[in-house]
Picture 1 (cartoon, rainbow, N blue to C red):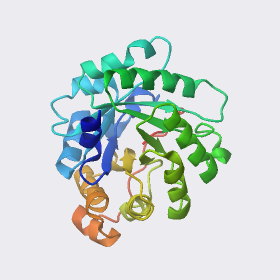
Picture 2 (cartoon, helix red, strand yellow):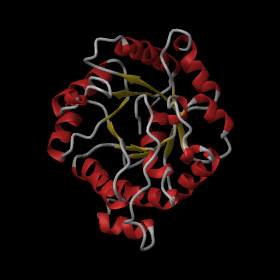
Picture 3 (cartoon, one colour):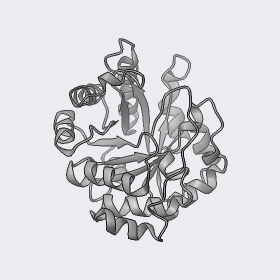
Picture 4 (spheres, rainbow, N blue to C red):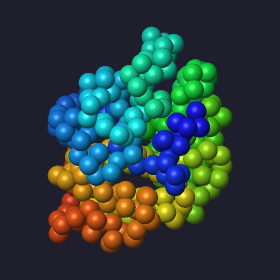
Length: 270
């Protein structure tokens, strides 16, 4: 388990994840993920550390992931939960991740705890994506609720927690301290520009101390996925400034708007 966690976080304790599990839950065709394998290869070329993907994609694009780690994004419904960890291991996953929705009154934390117990028993690192109040109840996306939700996920057995950025380094440090396990920030909505994206990532990782980020659409909807990934990696692993990371990302167009993505009726991740 410790060796696998080191594979995920690396020597500096940080990780850059490309979230590509959207194809498993969005109800619309995602133009940015039609050529899934090509986008994976671009992110690998840019220096990505890991991918977040559904089991089907992990199997179908196994050769494209190359040296990067792969985190299986799985549901926790009755039909899937009993064999989820075994299936993740069977396709070569380096970790497994599920959703949890604290403060909604559902049983997602209980289901996460069950998955976490199976993952621990079989030695697979476990990540919980904690969304306090769910995606719809935005009034519960407060620093306090994010912190408590992160700790609840950790107590359910998570080795790493993926959750919202609070919006400023000071309150995010409070989330990290309370969580008691490394915290990864989810990317959320498409940013207006690459500068905006890099600025938020630098705040959350370099200034606040998060273990990393899981970025989805801001990578695979970009016209230059490898360049965006290079810029993100330069901040996360080298601590560069936003301007320096923009230079690494390459070219005069790096501050151009990132194209919007298709909006799904369901939840949004990464």
